[in-house]
Length: 356
Ligand code: NAD
Ligand code: ZN
Image 1 (cartoon, helix red, strand yellow):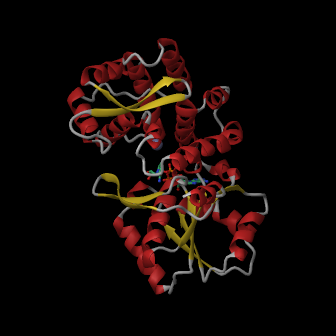
Image 2: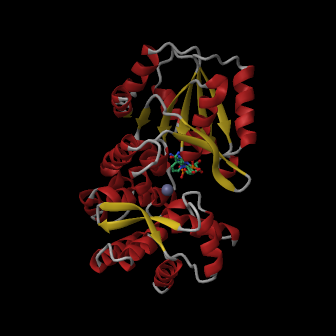
Image 3: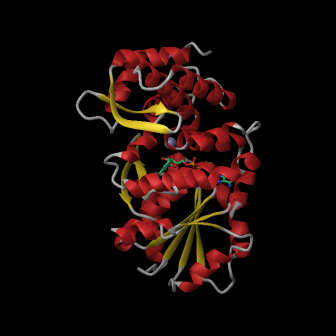
């Protein structure tokens, strides 16, 4: 087990401008063939940089899928398995996932199941995939309208980070990923939170210096509790209500980005932490005020309490009919498995509604 931990720790590498560490990795290991999975956007914006820096003796194929969460399904996985088979990929092939969380989830899933598992590495290109999705060993696809229903726990062999990729990322995507960074500060590291809220105007230059800390926090939590028995649950802060908001917005035909919903979820759950008597009112206010500086208000007035509660009860984290939350006891400190009653939950939603 100890050896495992050391292996996990070595996994994240920030790339030099000539990608030398990636080239070293690819040469040290003799892969029979390299498959680079991209979506249409990372094909256009990131692949040229990757190929321009990869040494020319390496033998690779490009696999491209359309962009978007709708592609994260079994049909796409099946197509990729078939292409790998047609191209005679053997057990010593490598998959390079160059993209956001859809690509790292999908590519990780396909690689971890093809021929019972081939090696893969992640090169995350969105802020969300850098700070969250590419780390932690969860791979998967959606099933019907349920997210991440089928998947594996498999670590990439390496995660190579090149923050310059963020230069072409749309602002809303950057802001969405920033919510996970704020979450990391709130649950585990007050200093990180304080550094993040110093960012006056949210942009690439502002976030890049803090990516590593955010990755380290996620990595650390995952190492301590890979199977989500205890501390990994803290990563769900803001996500219980956040997911419900995300689903209802989608159902109503006004889809919002994950991080936008999580930002609203974090405001609700910080207030809930206060209502539960575990977080000071002052800290709850600081959290609300700062999150609101970055995120537009999401109009949840039309969501009925019944709809929200039934979604919360269906959340896969719940056992029986209790609703489990990860809540804050301070900025930088999180408790998990806190059961809240519906009354307080509805009050916290009401608090958010009134912020408009
Ligand atoms: P995404 O992969 O769909 O990327 C968002 C958009 O940005 C896409 O249109 C993509 O083509 C585009 N894009 C990516 N990189 C770009 C770049 N450098 N320049 C310009 N455009 C670029 O979405 P995401 O937000 O990165 O990830 C969301 C997914 O991650 C969800 O499916 C979610 O379930 C998953 N996720 C997984 C984990 C995990 O632990 N495995 C954790 C969090 C999220
Ligand atoms: Zn999230």
